[in-house]
Length: 172
Ligand code: ADP
Image 1: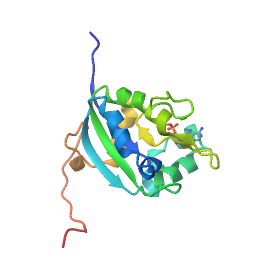
Image 2: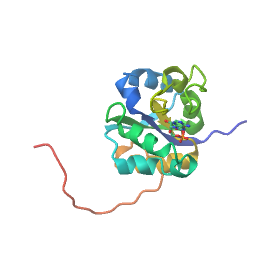
Image 3: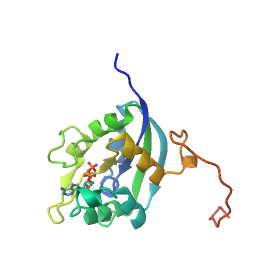
Image 4: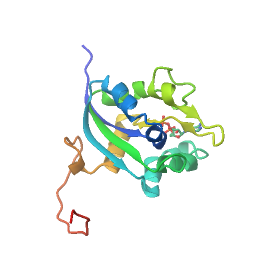
C-alpha cells in the first residue's frame, strides 16, 4: 500500500488571476483534490514579502527575479493576491499537478496554468495566474512567511507563545 502524508501547501491566486475574475474557476479546479482550506486572505503584497517569497529565484533565475517580484506585487495587473493554505494527503504534489508547469505554453492544457496562463509578449513574463509550493520544504518556508499561526485553523509547524503590545487598528 502506498503511504500518503498529510501536508500543507501554499496557493496564491496571482494578480492576473484576480483581475481576470478567475478566482472561482481556480478554486473549483482545486476543490477536485478534496483537500481542506485551512487559511485564506486577500492582501497587497509588500516588496519585502515578494522578495523573500522569491528568495531562491534570485539565484536560480536572476534575470526573471525582478519581473517576478513586480508581477506578484501587482505592478502589471492589480495590487492584490488571494493567499490560501490547503491541507491533506500529499497536498504539495496534488495541487502542483493541477496547477501545471511554470511555462503556461508547456503546461498540460487542462491544468490551471495551461487553461488560463499566457506569456506576456511585451515583458516576457510567464503570467501563470497561480503560485503553489513546489516541495514540502518550500511549502513550510512559504506558509511561515505568508501566514501567522493565528490565521490558520490548523497549524502544521512549531509555534511559540509570546507576550506583546503593539499599535493596531481596531473597529471604532
Ligand atoms: P514556479 O512558479 O512554477 O514555482 P519559478 O519559481 O521558477 O516557477 O518561477 C517563479 C515565477 O517567475 C513563475 O511562476 C513565473 O511567473 C515567472 N517565471 C519563471 N521562469 C520564467 C521565465 N523563464 N520567463 C518568464 N517568467 C518566468
